[in-house]
Length: 381
Image (cartoon, rainbow, N blue to C red; front, side):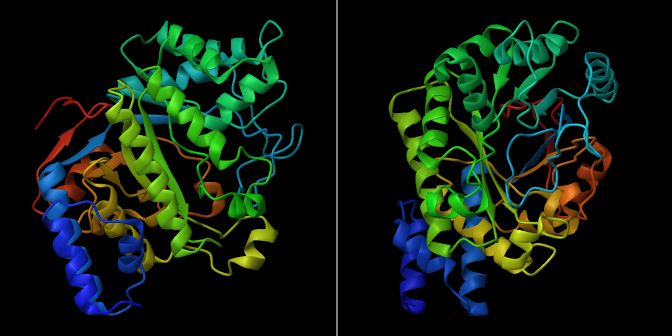
């Protein structure tokens, strides 16, 4: 491990707004001394202020997981079910509309839609028509709502089922009102790890390809990392490097679609399937490791991906609040319901009120603002 002089030199480089390398980011992430970690935190917080300002943003939104029936068997997933088994669900159009109407009543500006890969989810013989109908169900009744939906894994699933290209799928979804895509299903962008924790999922190159196509087509995306399971620090940094390269490509090519935010999703293992629990023998995220990774992500990515968000569902609200001092500038959404992480045993809850979010931010003596999905002001305070 490099000494404190190296750490100081790397942090000085970052403060002067120079790009640090993956090797330098790994050096920061490898630090163990409280003194070095405190300096990393301070630098991340300084860069957060310079790159994103003092105001903490949040969004009023609702998650709708339309089904948990899924053909895949990811080792970390406690959400999925086989059809016709206990706990399996598949929402009807009426249920989706009722959930959306309730969200709109509470001031939601976004519906986030994701679900399991259900082979029977078809309309008029195609998967694409089913997914198009999910968007149309919401947009025709609530045209003001931003539809944020369908991960790269879901895009690949539709394309495979209907023998279409990724661009054809995304273009068709855009036609009926897709507004942006979640950058989930990324897990760790390293096929050695993916082959262990999610061997049925798309590989790294496919995830990157689909996000890149979305950007070319003008579709904004988020970006995520599932951390704290069997991956190494080097693999975490390589993951960040791939996200940085994606964003740099979008900027250089002047694509309208870009990465809007980065979110660390620390592994929650309390009710995860037994194979991963044998490898990761703890139930809840390691807070110190997650906060250090949060800080290093801001230092490494912050000049190209300026919005960083903690997962209050996975970390709990108090730790998510603390992450706002480690480089994060956004506290995420109200969600209103959250199944995937909660079913894994997370203790953060499934819903936050806007009032609770604002109070949490105010406790830090920081201003807040309600944002849209794409970080424009919504009823700015």
